[in-house]
Length: 580
Image (cartoon, rainbow, N blue to C red):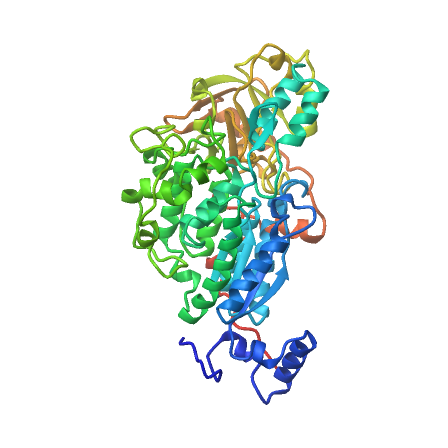
């Protein structure tokens, strides 16, 4: 598509809405004039949708009102017309039982919003955990030129001379609080100091993981994911997004040209090197499948075995936060370290290759972004497990747990609900040792519902009082990317639908073997089959509404938890809407 300076027929998608001498188009043009636009504002110009996940209760995106204005400035400068559209915010902090329940709703909304409006291209504004995959999944299916604008991490926290990391230090100090080592005044000080600006968690949690994945996949401006939310560079990057999306429309640079198998593999390698959140598994698989790329748990594990973790950022790293990562050179510098392992020929939203985008990138602090010869951890962030407890897979983050649990056997303590588990672990008379294995079930995609972040099960108070701060924990839930510890997650198939975790009993011996990627209950197969025959499914979580639809159609964790009818292989994508 060539830009037409004469403002006549341009071939823009939006031209169909504003065609001359047509009654329906007359209505569209008159309503634009009702909004205060003249025909010179919109005729023959790319119309850019700005999908903004701002809300008054989403602190990660509290700066997005202003950033949308920066995007509009860039769009106008490049000769387009920007139209801001509110999108479902799915904030992590307040959406219960979990924002994961609504990731697919955001993806559906994004796809249909783009398809049903006169948008030639879109800027996707997100950052809080599920907003990145939700927006990208929907836009991949819609297929118009798109660029992702990440919210950016908040500034690092501070209290009493200590640097605090969101999530990670909350868990750490909560254990000290439960042990009686933190006063009320100290607890309030930590609460006020741990999150002190707009932006996403400044640890390498799910938000930073997913924006880095999208950046590495070629869907953001180079290095955009590293810029702190309140840095003035974030404003400039937002305006750059506005300018660039207009050019992408003229170039017909659609996401199917960018999100290839090689791009997905680049994103996975980069994620492993950052010390990524375990949630990367679910979201990256879902995004890849939306793009028609068959990317599996085994693909991720293969890459994890050969990719060293080189970002010394909490929780897998020990010393630094995302602000430090940005000052050290950011994601471009990290990817430059990995350049020989990446497919640098991949096309990106810049219209250039990944290799061209990495030219000139430098590491400015090699303790924050380590060389491959001095990694934080010799393998990538995640390990994928299989065994008779998880025939379809489970995930653990070895870099963020005590190595003594890499190979471990112990008796299970099994709980069927979070309240039941919490009551038990708060009982100081609970008979538990550091060798026990805490198990929470009925917390998966259907059981949660939505697979909540309950997987970092609290350490029993009896062990906390003895000075213990880690133990092996297993669930079909997820955990926050800011979490740490010996937590096995995403057990598939989930217990709620009769997966093997449903058959485990308190006292059964569980064996974890991370080097050999195994998770098993040491129970005779005949006994397992007897238990399976006796198992009865629980009552349905929902009888109507979105929750009912979710339960009927959500896929298991190993398939990305998308809805079965939204995946690329289910059927053809709906075309342009009828306009009569």
